[in-house]
Image (cartoon, rainbow, N blue to C red; front, side, top):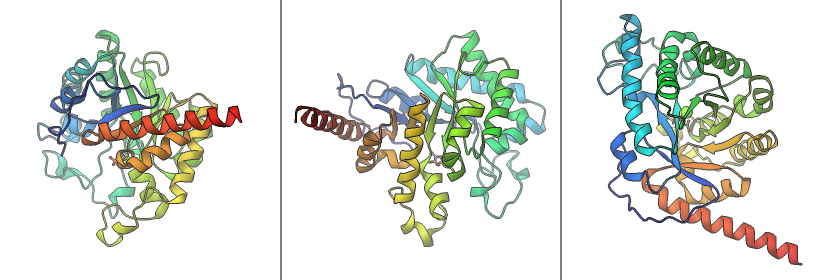
Length: 314
Ligand code: PEP
Ligand code: MG
C-alpha cells in the first residue's frame, strides 16, 4: 500500500544527472510527488484496472473489452495529465494466476503449482493477446488523439527477443509505431532476459530497459519471493545479481538504450550508489524514499566527478 503522507515537498530540488522516478499507481500519490520526481518509473496496469473489482478476463469472457479500453484510457489520462510532460512508464498487465481470484471473473483463473514462474507477463500478454490489444488501443487514443507523448510502454517478464518482436508487431497492428509514436521497452527481470539483452536489442529493438530486481533476484538465486523459509536469502546485492545488472547496463550503453530500475532495490541508498557507479540513467523508488535516494545519488555523482578530476590532474 502506498503511503504518500510522509513525502516532504522540498522545491526547488537539486537536479541529479541520474533521474529519480517514483513507483506509484494512484493519482492521489502522483499529485503529491510530481514536483520532486523526474517521472513515474513504474505504473502497474493491475492497479489501474482492478479498482472496480472486475478481473481483466471478465471483460474478455463477456465480450466487453471496449469497456476495458475506455476504463484504461480514462484512468491513465488523469495520471498523464497530472505529471505532464514528465514520463510515465506503464507496465502492461503482469497478473499472476493466484492473485485477484476473488474478483468477478477471477474464479476462472487456472490453478498453477508455482504462479511466480507461471502464466504472467509478456508470455500471457501474447497468449491472451485480445486483452493486450485492448490495452494498446487505450494507449493509442491517449498518444495519437490526445497528444500524451509522456507515456512509455514496458513489457514484463521477457525471456527472449522473439517475445518482444511479436509484442511490437501487435503494437504496430493496433496503430502505434514503436520508437516513433511511443517508446517501447522491457523489464529485465529474468536471467534469460539479462543474458540475451544484446539479441533483444539487435533483433527486436527496444528504447529502454528497466530492471525488476525482485524477480531478477528470485530467479538468479533460486529463492521463492513468497516462501518465508528462504526470505533471508533474498539479496539483490548478491554478486551474481550485480554482475547481471552491471553487464546489462554496459551493453545498453553501447547501443544507446536507456537504462532504469524499478524493483525494490532502488529504494535502498547503498544500492542506488552502486547503480550510479554502473552508469544507470534512472532509478525508480518508493515515494517515501525519493528524497533520501536523490541525496545519495547527488553525493555519489559529485564524488565520481571529483575522483575523475583528481585523476586527470595527477
Ligand atoms: C520486479 O520484479 O522487481 C518488479 C518490479 O515487478 P513485480 O514486483 O511486480 O514482480
Ligand atoms: Mg516482476
